[in-house]
Length: 306
Image 1 (spheres, one colour):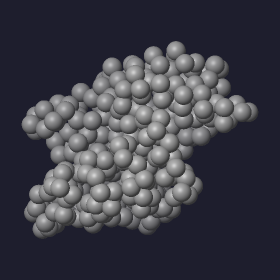
Image 2 (spheres, rainbow, N blue to C red):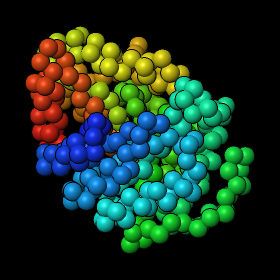
Image 3 (tube, rainbow, N blue to C red):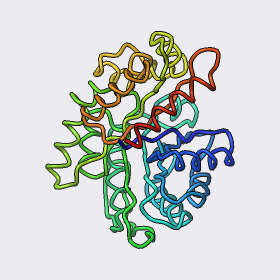
Image 4 (tube, rainbow, N blue to C red):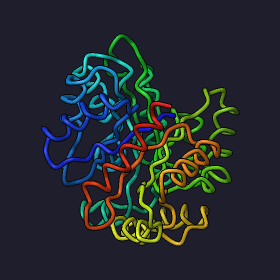
Protein backbone atom coordinates (compact mmCIF):
# COMPACT_ATOMS: atom_id res chain seq x y z
CA UNK A 1 0.00 0.00 0.00
CA UNK A 2 1.11 3.54 -0.69
CA UNK A 3 0.90 5.10 2.77
CA UNK A 4 2.32 8.48 3.71
CA UNK A 5 2.26 10.74 6.74
CA UNK A 6 1.88 14.40 7.52
CA UNK A 7 5.21 16.19 7.49
CA UNK A 8 4.10 18.92 9.89
CA UNK A 9 6.69 19.81 12.54
CA UNK A 10 7.51 23.01 14.48
CA UNK A 11 11.04 23.51 13.09
CA UNK A 12 12.94 22.84 9.86
CA UNK A 13 15.27 20.49 11.73
CA UNK A 14 12.34 18.40 12.94
CA UNK A 15 10.76 18.39 9.48
CA UNK A 16 13.98 17.02 8.03
CA UNK A 17 14.28 14.45 10.79
CA UNK A 18 10.67 13.40 10.20
CA UNK A 19 11.44 12.84 6.52
CA UNK A 20 14.54 10.77 7.31
CA UNK A 21 12.61 8.63 9.81
CA UNK A 22 9.62 8.17 7.50
CA UNK A 23 11.89 7.05 4.67
CA UNK A 24 13.73 4.62 6.94
CA UNK A 25 10.38 3.21 8.10
CA UNK A 26 9.28 2.53 4.52
CA UNK A 27 6.57 5.16 4.11
CA UNK A 28 5.98 6.23 0.52
CA UNK A 29 5.44 9.94 1.11
CA UNK A 30 5.24 12.93 3.42
CA UNK A 31 2.68 15.69 2.97
CA UNK A 32 3.43 19.21 4.18
CA UNK A 33 0.69 21.76 4.89
CA UNK A 34 0.99 25.33 3.72
CA UNK A 35 -0.62 28.40 5.20
CA UNK A 36 -0.28 32.12 5.72
CA UNK A 37 1.83 31.45 8.82
CA UNK A 38 4.54 29.53 6.99
CA UNK A 39 5.82 28.15 3.70
CA UNK A 40 7.07 24.55 3.72
CA UNK A 41 9.03 24.63 0.46
CA UNK A 42 12.44 25.52 1.90
CA UNK A 43 12.19 22.78 4.51
CA UNK A 44 11.01 20.32 1.85
CA UNK A 45 14.02 21.09 -0.35
CA UNK A 46 16.35 20.50 2.59
CA UNK A 47 14.50 17.30 3.51
CA UNK A 48 14.74 16.15 -0.09
CA UNK A 49 18.51 16.51 -0.05
CA UNK A 50 18.69 14.60 3.24
CA UNK A 51 16.72 11.65 1.83
CA UNK A 52 16.91 9.57 -1.33
CA UNK A 53 13.56 7.94 -2.05
CA UNK A 54 10.54 9.31 -0.22
CA UNK A 55 8.04 11.48 -2.11
CA UNK A 56 7.57 14.96 -0.66
CA UNK A 57 4.32 16.74 -1.38
CA UNK A 58 2.38 19.81 -0.35
CA UNK A 59 -1.08 19.34 1.13
CA UNK A 60 -1.77 21.98 0.19
CA UNK A 61 -0.36 25.32 -0.93
CA UNK A 62 -2.98 28.04 -1.21
CA UNK A 63 -3.50 29.32 -4.72
CA UNK A 64 -4.89 32.80 -4.07
CA UNK A 65 -1.70 34.42 -2.66
CA UNK A 66 0.57 33.15 -5.46
CA UNK A 67 0.23 33.63 -9.23
CA UNK A 68 0.32 30.26 -11.07
CA UNK A 69 3.41 31.27 -13.08
CA UNK A 70 5.23 32.04 -9.84
CA UNK A 71 3.93 28.83 -8.28
CA UNK A 72 5.36 26.86 -11.20
CA UNK A 73 8.73 28.54 -10.73
CA UNK A 74 8.70 27.80 -7.01
CA UNK A 75 7.93 24.13 -7.62
CA UNK A 76 10.69 23.83 -10.20
CA UNK A 77 13.12 25.47 -7.78
CA UNK A 78 12.35 22.85 -5.13
CA UNK A 79 12.96 20.02 -7.59
CA UNK A 80 16.23 21.61 -8.67
CA UNK A 81 17.31 22.00 -5.03
CA UNK A 82 16.49 18.38 -4.25
CA UNK A 83 18.54 17.39 -7.28
CA UNK A 84 16.40 14.37 -8.16
CA UNK A 85 13.27 14.69 -10.31
CA UNK A 86 10.20 12.62 -9.54
CA UNK A 87 10.21 13.10 -5.76
CA UNK A 88 8.24 16.34 -5.41
CA UNK A 89 4.48 16.65 -5.88
CA UNK A 90 2.66 19.96 -5.78
CA UNK A 91 -0.69 19.80 -4.04
CA UNK A 92 -2.70 23.02 -4.36
CA UNK A 93 -6.09 24.31 -3.31
CA UNK A 94 -8.02 27.55 -2.90
CA UNK A 95 -8.17 27.19 0.91
CA UNK A 96 -11.32 28.66 2.42
CA UNK A 97 -12.99 31.96 3.18
CA UNK A 98 -11.77 32.64 6.74
CA UNK A 99 -8.15 32.38 5.57
CA UNK A 100 -8.39 34.05 2.14
CA UNK A 101 -10.80 36.81 3.11
CA UNK A 102 -10.38 37.02 6.87
CA UNK A 103 -6.59 36.68 7.10
CA UNK A 104 -5.32 37.78 3.70
CA UNK A 105 -8.03 40.27 2.76
CA UNK A 106 -8.60 38.81 -0.72
CA UNK A 107 -11.89 38.05 -2.39
CA UNK A 108 -13.11 34.47 -2.11
CA UNK A 109 -16.15 35.10 -4.28
CA UNK A 110 -15.48 32.49 -6.99
CA UNK A 111 -13.16 29.74 -5.69
CA UNK A 112 -14.33 27.21 -8.28
CA UNK A 113 -13.65 29.48 -11.25
CA UNK A 114 -10.41 30.72 -9.73
CA UNK A 115 -9.05 27.19 -9.17
CA UNK A 116 -10.24 26.00 -12.58
CA UNK A 117 -8.29 28.77 -14.33
CA UNK A 118 -5.31 28.38 -12.01
CA UNK A 119 -4.89 24.69 -12.85
CA UNK A 120 -5.26 25.34 -16.59
CA UNK A 121 -2.26 27.67 -16.34
CA UNK A 122 -0.15 25.82 -13.78
CA UNK A 123 -0.35 22.19 -14.90
CA UNK A 124 0.89 22.73 -18.49
CA UNK A 125 3.78 24.87 -17.23
CA UNK A 126 4.87 21.99 -14.99
CA UNK A 127 4.71 19.65 -17.98
CA UNK A 128 7.20 21.93 -19.70
CA UNK A 129 4.66 23.53 -22.03
CA UNK A 130 4.27 27.24 -22.82
CA UNK A 131 0.89 28.69 -21.87
CA UNK A 132 -1.28 31.24 -23.63
CA UNK A 133 -4.46 31.53 -21.67
CA UNK A 134 -7.19 34.16 -21.42
CA UNK A 135 -9.80 33.68 -18.73
CA UNK A 136 -11.74 35.80 -16.29
CA UNK A 137 -9.15 35.82 -13.50
CA UNK A 138 -5.94 35.06 -15.42
CA UNK A 139 -4.55 36.22 -18.73
CA UNK A 140 -1.18 34.54 -19.18
CA UNK A 141 1.44 34.34 -21.91
CA UNK A 142 4.39 32.54 -20.34
CA UNK A 143 7.01 29.92 -20.99
CA UNK A 144 7.59 27.04 -18.60
CA UNK A 145 10.24 27.02 -15.87
CA UNK A 146 13.38 25.02 -16.45
CA UNK A 147 12.44 21.48 -15.39
CA UNK A 148 15.07 19.12 -14.01
CA UNK A 149 15.88 16.63 -16.79
CA UNK A 150 12.61 17.67 -18.45
CA UNK A 151 10.56 15.61 -15.98
CA UNK A 152 6.97 16.71 -15.34
CA UNK A 153 6.20 17.98 -11.85
CA UNK A 154 2.82 16.47 -10.93
CA UNK A 155 0.00 18.65 -9.64
CA UNK A 156 -2.72 17.42 -7.30
CA UNK A 157 -5.81 19.53 -6.70
CA UNK A 158 -7.69 19.66 -3.40
CA UNK A 159 -10.87 18.84 -5.31
CA UNK A 160 -14.07 17.62 -3.73
CA UNK A 161 -16.84 19.39 -5.68
CA UNK A 162 -17.81 18.10 -9.17
CA UNK A 163 -16.33 21.06 -11.08
CA UNK A 164 -12.87 20.77 -9.55
CA UNK A 165 -12.87 16.97 -9.78
CA UNK A 166 -13.45 17.40 -13.51
CA UNK A 167 -10.64 19.95 -13.75
CA UNK A 168 -8.29 17.73 -11.74
CA UNK A 169 -9.04 14.76 -13.96
CA UNK A 170 -8.69 16.70 -17.22
CA UNK A 171 -5.59 18.75 -16.41
CA UNK A 172 -3.78 17.50 -13.30
CA UNK A 173 -2.32 14.29 -11.92
CA UNK A 174 -5.18 13.75 -9.48
CA UNK A 175 -6.72 14.99 -6.27
CA UNK A 176 -5.74 15.21 -2.62
CA UNK A 177 -8.94 15.41 -0.57
CA UNK A 178 -9.01 15.80 3.21
CA UNK A 179 -11.48 13.92 5.50
CA UNK A 180 -13.13 12.14 2.58
CA UNK A 181 -13.86 8.63 3.82
CA UNK A 182 -14.23 5.46 1.79
CA UNK A 183 -17.91 6.12 1.00
CA UNK A 184 -17.21 9.68 -0.22
CA UNK A 185 -14.34 8.45 -2.38
CA UNK A 186 -16.12 5.42 -3.79
CA UNK A 187 -19.45 7.07 -4.54
CA UNK A 188 -18.41 10.64 -5.40
CA UNK A 189 -14.71 11.39 -5.89
CA UNK A 190 -13.32 8.37 -7.73
CA UNK A 191 -16.06 8.00 -10.39
CA UNK A 192 -15.99 11.68 -11.32
CA UNK A 193 -12.25 12.21 -11.52
CA UNK A 194 -11.64 8.91 -13.32
CA UNK A 195 -14.31 9.68 -15.90
CA UNK A 196 -12.88 13.16 -16.49
CA UNK A 197 -9.36 11.78 -16.92
CA UNK A 198 -10.52 9.06 -19.30
CA UNK A 199 -12.55 11.49 -21.40
CA UNK A 200 -9.50 13.76 -21.69
CA UNK A 201 -7.15 10.91 -22.57
CA UNK A 202 -5.22 11.46 -19.35
CA UNK A 203 -3.60 8.72 -17.21
CA UNK A 204 -5.45 7.16 -14.30
CA UNK A 205 -5.56 9.92 -11.65
CA UNK A 206 -4.12 9.65 -8.17
CA UNK A 207 -6.48 10.00 -5.21
CA UNK A 208 -4.39 10.80 -2.14
CA UNK A 209 -6.87 10.49 0.71
CA UNK A 210 -6.01 12.46 3.83
CA UNK A 211 -7.61 11.16 7.02
CA UNK A 212 -7.01 11.14 10.77
CA UNK A 213 -5.93 7.69 11.96
CA UNK A 214 -5.79 6.35 15.51
CA UNK A 215 -5.10 2.78 16.63
CA UNK A 216 -6.83 2.55 19.99
CA UNK A 217 -8.97 -0.08 21.68
CA UNK A 218 -11.68 2.40 22.63
CA UNK A 219 -13.01 3.59 19.26
CA UNK A 220 -15.36 6.13 20.83
CA UNK A 221 -12.48 7.76 22.71
CA UNK A 222 -10.40 7.82 19.53
CA UNK A 223 -13.21 9.44 17.54
CA UNK A 224 -13.64 12.05 20.25
CA UNK A 225 -9.92 12.86 20.11
CA UNK A 226 -10.04 13.21 16.31
CA UNK A 227 -13.18 15.33 16.54
CA UNK A 228 -11.47 17.67 18.99
CA UNK A 229 -8.20 17.95 17.06
CA UNK A 230 -9.88 18.61 13.70
CA UNK A 231 -13.03 20.38 14.86
CA UNK A 232 -12.45 23.42 12.63
CA UNK A 233 -13.01 21.39 9.46
CA UNK A 234 -16.52 20.52 10.57
CA UNK A 235 -17.39 24.23 10.48
CA UNK A 236 -16.27 24.90 6.88
CA UNK A 237 -18.79 24.49 4.02
CA UNK A 238 -16.48 22.62 1.63
CA UNK A 239 -15.60 20.04 4.26
CA UNK A 240 -19.16 19.83 5.49
CA UNK A 241 -20.15 18.78 1.97
CA UNK A 242 -17.57 16.01 1.75
CA UNK A 243 -18.48 14.81 5.25
CA UNK A 244 -22.12 14.69 4.19
CA UNK A 245 -21.18 12.65 1.12
CA UNK A 246 -19.47 10.19 3.42
CA UNK A 247 -22.46 10.22 5.79
CA UNK A 248 -20.17 11.42 8.55
CA UNK A 249 -21.49 13.90 11.11
CA UNK A 250 -18.05 15.42 11.62
CA UNK A 251 -14.30 14.84 11.32
CA UNK A 252 -14.36 12.33 14.17
CA UNK A 253 -16.84 10.16 12.28
CA UNK A 254 -14.69 10.28 9.14
CA UNK A 255 -11.54 9.26 11.02
CA UNK A 256 -10.09 5.76 10.76
CA UNK A 257 -10.05 4.42 14.32
CA UNK A 258 -10.11 1.18 16.29
CA UNK A 259 -7.78 -1.65 17.16
CA UNK A 260 -5.21 -2.99 14.66
CA UNK A 261 -7.61 -5.31 12.84
CA UNK A 262 -10.37 -2.70 12.62
CA UNK A 263 -8.06 0.02 11.31
CA UNK A 264 -6.54 -2.38 8.79
CA UNK A 265 -9.99 -3.23 7.41
CA UNK A 266 -10.93 0.45 7.13
CA UNK A 267 -7.71 1.28 5.29
CA UNK A 268 -8.23 -1.65 2.92
CA UNK A 269 -11.78 -0.40 2.28
CA UNK A 270 -10.39 3.05 1.46
CA UNK A 271 -8.14 1.60 -1.25
CA UNK A 272 -10.92 -0.64 -2.53
CA UNK A 273 -13.11 2.48 -2.88
CA UNK A 274 -10.57 4.05 -5.22
CA UNK A 275 -7.89 5.75 -3.16
CA UNK A 276 -4.40 5.26 -4.58
CA UNK A 277 -2.64 6.62 -1.49
CA UNK A 278 -3.41 7.22 2.17
CA UNK A 279 -2.04 10.40 3.71
CA UNK A 280 -2.41 9.55 7.39
CA UNK A 281 -2.56 12.09 10.20
CA UNK A 282 -1.93 10.05 13.38
CA UNK A 283 -4.12 11.14 16.29
CA UNK A 284 -2.74 10.58 19.82
CA UNK A 285 -5.39 9.32 22.22
CA UNK A 286 -5.58 9.05 25.99
CA UNK A 287 -3.15 10.05 28.73
CA UNK A 288 -0.08 8.39 27.19
CA UNK A 289 -0.13 10.19 23.86
CA UNK A 290 3.39 9.17 22.80
CA UNK A 291 2.62 5.47 23.20
CA UNK A 292 -0.73 5.89 21.46
CA UNK A 293 0.87 7.62 18.48
CA UNK A 294 3.61 5.00 18.27
CA UNK A 295 1.02 2.21 18.15
CA UNK A 296 -0.62 3.92 15.18
CA UNK A 297 2.72 4.44 13.42
CA UNK A 298 3.73 0.80 13.88
CA UNK A 299 0.56 -0.44 12.19
CA UNK A 300 0.86 2.08 9.36
CA UNK A 301 4.50 1.10 8.85
CA UNK A 302 3.57 -2.58 8.64
CA UNK A 303 0.82 -1.87 6.13
CA UNK A 304 3.16 0.30 4.05
CA UNK A 305 5.58 -2.61 3.86
CA UNK A 306 2.90 -5.15 2.91
